[in-house]
Image 1 (spheres, rainbow over the protein chains, first blue to last red):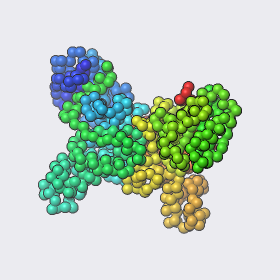
Image 2 (tube, one colour):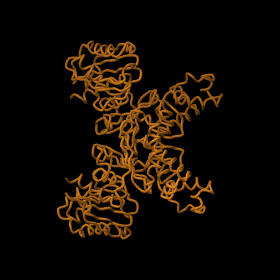
Image 3 (cartoon, chains in turn red, cyan):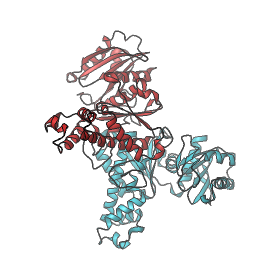
Length: 314
Length: 314
């Protein structure tokens, strides 16, 4: 079984033919150029599909994009980086242009669907995907199906509060988990810590100018045995642990899959998170608790978009 | 349609015959005496059912009790106040003794089911019940069905963290919503505030000895225009608002039903909660947001238990 997968990003539109067993069998990419307007962008998405030589026999199109998506997976609301897209039935627009059925879903939910079809999520009936990137996102899989809530917006896991007095982020409230684990906010927290230790290798590496500090620098230093880097990631992992407790107590789902740039910190982040969960979740919830790392590589969003098409049209 | 309803409390076992249209049509009660042991208690539950003259024609038995309940609604784990009940298939035990099918569910979920069948929840397909009593509990209704998660323990809403540095409660972590709204914890917070204002009527009422202060005292004083009582309930309502934001961002359910003693504070609690939600939830989630009060009276748990039987056996 084959599907067409689209990853609509701020910079590039990626398209692929994906086989359910073999994965990606053909792939193409074109610049997004969102500033040229909605209709031209939709035309260009259809164009990238046209370019795929092996598209015959595909059961339909799945597309991942930023923004909130309606419960019927056709319409996107206020996608960031796509000017003029207040509310667009993108699935219908693409169907019209290609003659193929189409469904859309937001990036974090696409990551969850990708893991369910092609990644570590294959072994779980129910799990929670947490994407740790520029922002923190989430997708909830219950009984092998994406959970969308009553209006389609469930799983905004990055906006869950763990300290209502806490720092601000892009969120509309303080102390959400994104305010600690979003890439920029983690870098800011790290800078605030490092600046107190001029003798530390991390201070010397950036010479007191931390604008360029990224989470990967912390991971590299932690791997080299830098105690300060380890402490920063430990505190960050603990905060992730408190958020996971909130997800568990509400949903009673016990499998967590982490992906995205910040998750590459691996054990430095995961072990403190697990320790907090073990210490502070209600004990019966620990039975079956797992927290694992997912890395489907650069093409994960194409695999997820294809999974959406498999779920929708097969 | 009729069902048998049981409310197994620490003090009394209440039993009733409940008609789906007319509500409770006959009712009886007997002391729990849990210290006499599990088997005698199960016998006595069966006995109260025997006493109900109008039990003929009932489709089955629903029972509410404290503790966590398995996903198939037969088995309870570690119910507080019931010594010797580590893990009991209570549904089977009662079926054996009465010859009728039986399902069980915990008190907070029973409150949600009761509201769905007989209360304000009737008008919602999906809603979240928050029970504000000695502790804080919850029940999640999605598409007219109780949401149980993967193991049956979903909806432990009282154990959701809003400040991981916050005060302790019966929970295993700090700053859960129960640590602010559980009856005893709200009283403690109120005492800490009132003790600073010896001139206030609340101080004078208790003469500096706040052991007997209950949330209802705050409500009464707020109704009389006492600014300090209003402020205490306002701060408490704001904290409830942060918890509601967490439930909404995870589940995308927009209807909230509040019950239990502390919820009798009404507008003094609800308006500040709503204001925090309006200010701090992601704007698209506000569409359809409602927070309402439920009062099915002293018999609410019997109505909920009957609803469980209707859901299970009709």
